Length: 505
Image (cartoon, rainbow, N blue to C red; front, side, top):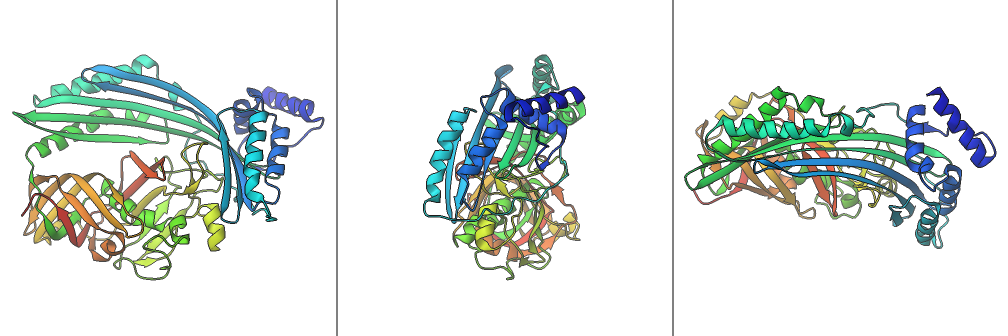
């Protein structure tokens, strides 16, 4: 390390004619050397020249940054008793942004060269026409590390990864004679990010992400049903590939498939609905979370716009977005603008307390950035996005909650959902749900859809369980054509009235 540091110092002297101390940066010397290697030593970019081009491009702008990204990803898919895909990909590039008022100039390229950067700088400067803004203060510093810097893709040889999927396939097929199809996948990625701001402010982050997913189809006669289970997080593969771990995933996927083999047609109409803990928090994510993102509220297109301080949920309902949970899929040490993520209380005891903010919308709304400025890659502009969004636990036992249901359903798993931001209307499809009558959980049901609207659904929460859980680490959120990893969570909750779409009574 000492030798590498000295070489770096010599390189700086040679390139600039002087010795420059390390700029103010949220990183270690090791991190500096790593990103210097990816973005400068191996490319046509010079660090000092890059800083000069950036400073000139953003002179007179209100905000902006140069976002540098290097990423590796791999994916293995085993299906129909054989390895169907084995992919490895490397991508790199930059995105240059200039912000003036509400206007944004953005240019990106996969070529890391001074010529490409100059073309980008020329393009984004158009947004500054007639503007004489004062550059906003940069993000706060942080020394926190929520995940390891090491690249997980080198943790296991190719043969071990493919053998793992073969073992999962064999175990699932041997588990039950009704298993007709098994699909499993292992994926991982690692990103090195460097954010450079005018004046030499530099923020770095190294982001691992892994996931193991299992899907099982079971059949009897002409009928077939499926179940799936996945797990992952911002760490290496080790925790997910032990036999105990992946066998639990297979067992759960098979259990879901066998439950659905016995499922009856879902009822239809307005009724009581109990949501299980964990992954069902995706309803919270869609119905409420998106509506609390800053851009929708600044533009007043959200059903929650202008309602800070108002009651938007029943007493006891507290909703939080927290990007600081160590190792979680939705967590980030810093967001894609360089702002440290935070624990943001959105709804407290039913009262609307805040919005999720990136730098642009926070500045225009006179609020503080919350560390929720996220982008899919260097080719995309940042926008307000969720991290890990969840509802706090209450004090009711789940069995107690179910015992109060006279006529309703118990929804345990969703395949996902969608929401109209302006109206707040949402729809979710249940992948595992049960009929509940007179406090007794009955037969499983299929093809149940939950229909409602975000502004009212949380006002109908009458009981909150003590069994809070986060999802196992599989969430992906889409917005404006961009997908980012997220987390969700909640305890078991009872909603007194929600429309269920199904086949009939």
